[in-house]
Image (cartoon, rainbow, N blue to C red; front, side):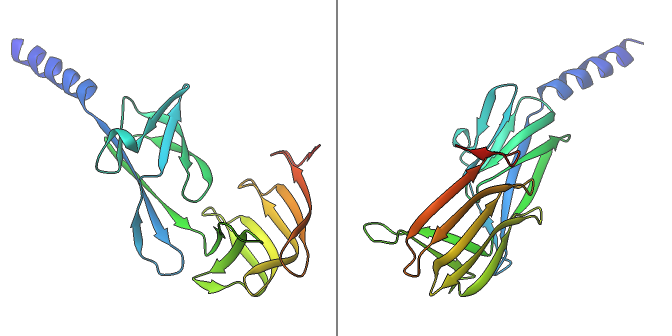
Length: 180
């Protein structure tokens, strides 16, 4: 009987003392290569857990449960269920990427799989919803560029002139309501 109590006691201690690991893996949509990243963090009950606390790109969590994942590298936020001692997710890096140019006008260029965006292009979030739709010429936006939230609602509509300069911008909240 004493042995049974000891087994139950030690198994209870080991369950509560185990670290819970989370690792986010990025996959390049263009090359299909796996890319390690440490630009993400998880939040639960107002507390943030980041990769800065670990030198392996993994996050050590205190408990299982539902967390909010902030994937800064691709600008996405997801809900993730942590239900094992070792957890991981894979997100796809979008094919269309926006690059900020410094000290130049216009400031942004768009590339799709390292080629200049040309014509009407559509970019997607990792969950498959549309991230942006725009018309491009020589990697610059010309005409209208629409951006969407991961929930599919419109985020912004921007108008650019033929030289890629922003002339008008209308923004919306996550419910699709106009922001004044």
